[in-house]
Image: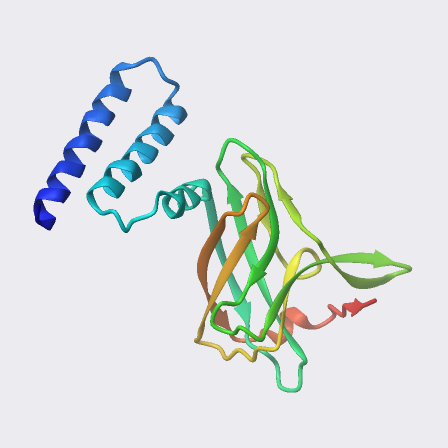
Length: 193
């Protein structure tokens, strides 16, 4: 059986499942997941090297929307910073355990929060960030953010990130690197402690 016949057979199977789920009394969210799972199964049958596990991991994080940016690394600064806005449009909470820098294997990104102690803002590392269903996390200066160690960033570059979740799912995003805005940074002094 050639490739075009495999694709045709796979698509016919997916279409049949889609028709079945449309006329059956399943809730809409369940129908959508059922279609995705059967689509992966039929595609895997047509192309044996395709793994269902990889496809289902992608489906797990599909309800997340992520946008953000990183700041260029100032001269002499030991680390950089990035901010993400993450919206969990799914039907259950997510726990973000960390962020990886796939293009920079020796570098690391840390989740941080800023807290006020005795009139001084201090940054504290976070072990995880919980994203309730339907909620958003907006990282910003003076609040939750990503500290970037071991990588120098220049304005105009793109920075690939891999978000790692407690359920084993990952999500790859690419964010732009923006010029450092000295006016925005003025008066915002944070200390690690």
